[in-house]
Image 1 (cartoon, rainbow, N blue to C red):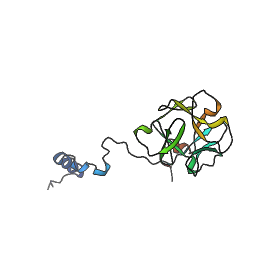
Image 2 (cartoon, rainbow, N blue to C red):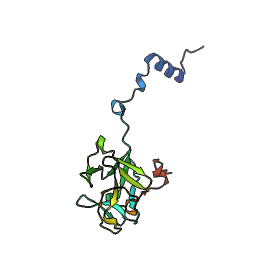
Image 3 (cartoon, rainbow, N blue to C red):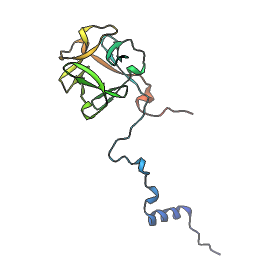
Length: 171
């Protein structure tokens, strides 16, 4: 006696064929609609002056040079020309001042030129004021001339897996 039973794989294929791909539609909150997904990564970057100090957000909200301590007030991120610190963007204010503000389309003001950070909005460079290399020196915008006080290093603080934006491997 022969049974007319369908194999499970054939049944699934028939369901998809007859029902379309309705069973595979993404949930509405998974649709990106042209927006890149917000990634969460733990990689921290520091902005280091040629004098070996980290660019730091002070308690008063200004940028200063300080000894590097890997604190959250020294952890930067880069997003296509937007220099981000404390989830805000560093932007030009006035003639030579800097401020942190909510990130907007016009926050993408920065461009790396060799080891300098050039502000495209004002055509000025990020500068350690007064050519001083000691803790507590404020940062500002100044004419670009290529001096040591306009030289910065973008240093990643995470490990290799973080740099690849891969999840940590665990056994």
